[in-house]
Length: 608
Image 1: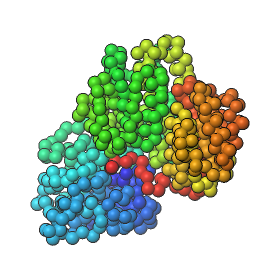
Image 2: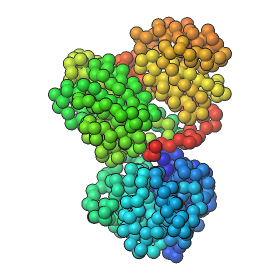
Image 3: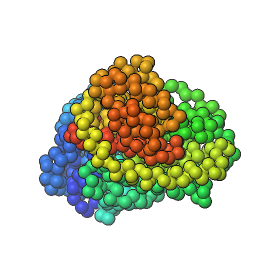
Image 4: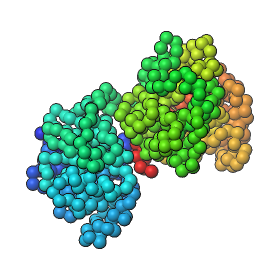
């Protein structure tokens, strides 16, 4: 959510700010603004709407000369999207300028205190109190002032701050909201995520919780909230800069769907050695793995759906009981973490607020936490006891595709490793599964190359009001993700149901012409699911089926069938999800939706 960019150096700041913010558009936003110091005053330009409005207002930054600046894309939390509520915010005489990601939970209390001191507020935001709070405590020492307000603010925040009295300094602060800084060839830069800085530097510093950065055009210093100096080492980012560009595709989402074969390969290849699964990141001996009695998988959104899939995989393959929780629910249900429980948290960004809170809570309760993460150096990557990277590369579209596929692979590998160590999978069985795993990239590519068939079918349902997805077992988990893909980018109402639950009430929603997508990849459940398809078809539904090659029986109950290649029954999600991703994508394109940046959604949800 939201995006921050800041720059101090020899170059003009405004073009760098606008370029960096453009690389953060995927995070979701409804307004944008920049502030640039021109040597005499800090000029602020901000507006509701997309970044192109800000580019037009500033003539691509040419109207705002200066070598020091901060910029922001805002996703509204406190106050509606508007020019006034857009960042940056400032004190009365515009001598202290702030951009902020996160939520100040005690802002009302602080606001009342400041109003009693005579401060006036022009916006509805919690961020404006930061500017006034800085003004209230400022006595000429910015570092001391920043530290004071950090002791008084509750909640999450990443801040970029300019003090007009100190034109050679740029300050950055972090607490529970991501922030990175890095050296460029002629200055220093701050940002809330890696894509914003790739054009300017590959060596970045990840700011830890409650740390302050003071940077000049030539140097940067790090401090604790108690103003103690901190030594830090930079991290090299090896992402291909082209991975954060569209590369000729109409949308990032389509490009990232086509990157799934590579993401799958890159995730499993380093972990298959001499015919065995080797996951060094686990940092667990075979004896320690054998001692695991239960696994709790916790995630949000699509990552949660990979967890639902892996429950069937772990329990069926490794015979380990698995609970799958939504992170936002796990936090508040007083969970029981018995000895021998491994907690696995899954997140693409590694910054998801609810998931990060689960990690910390689980560690407080004495559990070992494994993070499955895509972003190197992210909060969860740093704080988890162990981290397993998915190696999907930067994912820009809000609706995940390749990160989801890479997460599935990581979970398959974990389940296979546990099954082998616990004696539920022998050498021959492991070898067969590894061969099926290695075949997935080619099979995914084949399905992607069949996109015209999916596009043709999608065009028939551009005006759909309701779409239902049904399946059993792993197929139910696939249905959850297929439904989410459709509704989050096309805005069509969609629901996923365990097929056996239709008769318990939901079949009453089926009307003449309603589209029902049925997923059938588990052979032992074919007949059961086909009977559910017949139930909805006799009530007027048009039935789309996604099933394995050779399942001709499905054609008597379906109106339209998409076949996927044969693979191990535990890996079918990796194939069946591809046509459902394409279906959602082409529906959204046909309806004229902003596919990469769907309304009201953000890529990295860093607030509750």
